[in-house]
Image 1 (cartoon, rainbow, N blue to C red):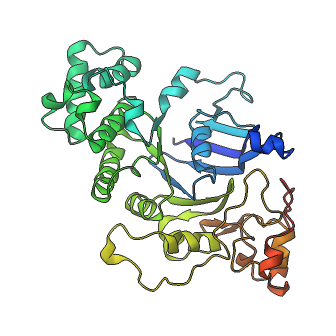
Image 2 (cartoon, rainbow, N blue to C red; image 1 turned 90 degrees about the horizontal axis):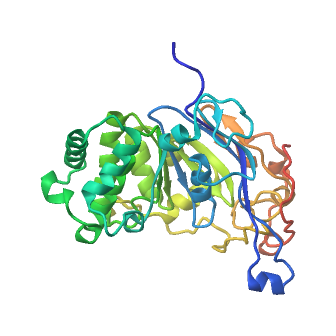
Image 3 (tube, helix red, strand yellow; image 1 turned 60 degrees about the vertical axis):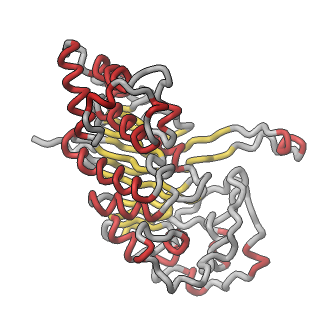
Length: 370
């Protein structure tokens, strides 16, 4: 009988960082915390994909790290197979911390920094095999290493096994990093901008490879990208969900086709506008009008009151300055925008001008669920 418990549950997670920078101290604001993630929830199933998209500094990497146990939340809970991975709310879980760490893996944006410069590819891939599959002897480990190298397209395997990282291209290093994570037999892989450093053709190859290997290793992905084109390609291919983040919050989440073809949140539409297609021949030539009031991103330690996007939103009205929109469920999508509610007072609220949109900030204003 299949369990109803999700593979991974992120429940109302918050992550705060202190800010003691010199300039902020001189301004008397050195103790203001930066709430990188603010009350985020989502679930991940087996062989699932969730892509987190947003501008730099929106909190997507911090959220991804919290989801795989690399960043302890300030508040909220992360559960793997029903067990709190930090042990704060489950004193007698069935899974050991070692088992949880093995099941939750990461691929970094820069594979060169995660591969030991003085270790060969063979040694790099033997390490996870020893940790996760201790019953294998040296011959079996070598066979598994060669098989994985063939699967990730580094052929002939014997020509790559004894190379060092400096003897590999950027794309080859990223393939080795992926192979190392996969050899841990993980249930979840956090891919942190794992293709952003590659050129367009190599990005597509890498995303195709991740897709091909997903069913073989039976894993799920939390895929981070600031590029909507990468998110669109990878998530649609696997049939996953896209989650849009802004200043620590998820403002829209739903199936890839729904979010991409019919975005509801104004920020999602702005990201669509700002992202060129992976194939330049398919670029939209009719997107001339900037769908933003301003390109300036607010200070994350002092976010705007009400809807955090209202200072940049071309659709913002007076109510958006003072009230925080709840996450509204519509079929299989959630959107945090008053415009998604046809009966909301937003529609009768005065429109904002350029001056009022930039005033009235309240640090960490309490959310209203009205």
